[in-house]
Length: 176
Image 1 (cartoon, rainbow, N blue to C red):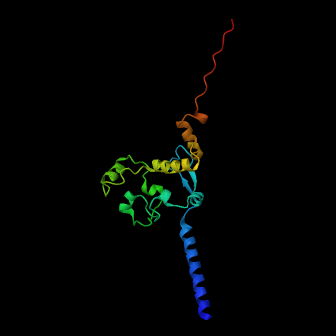
Image 2: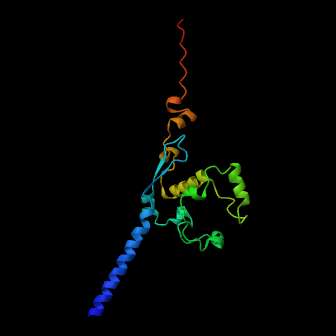
Image 3: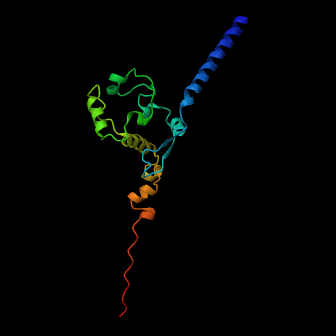
């Protein structure tokens, strides 16, 4: 009887340790992410990370193989089959904000192995390819200002809001 009780306690302890480790593993994952890469023209996008995790259940859909998710694309798996989790999983960790600077182009040119990742989009394109593609499939918001609320700088560049051109005055008609 004592051995059965001991095995039961060990089993329950093991289950509790697995549950605690799963909670602790998720502790570093932010519930909300503020994306402010274009805040010169738009307010930062408040990205509800927790809602996307709960809805999609697969981090690899957005983060590719960086979270340790299994690589499903056979072309990617040739190099990344056993990549494991990476220290940086954010979009800006892999996708540069301005892919056409001399530095970014040199890095791409000198990249090893030289054949792959030449088609890796810049940060803005990565957001739009991933976000819009999924939103179109799942009926999420797809209008520019659904996610990007334009600020005064954006209104100025797009000539809207208080920066909109004034309507021309109507000509006065002469009475004869």
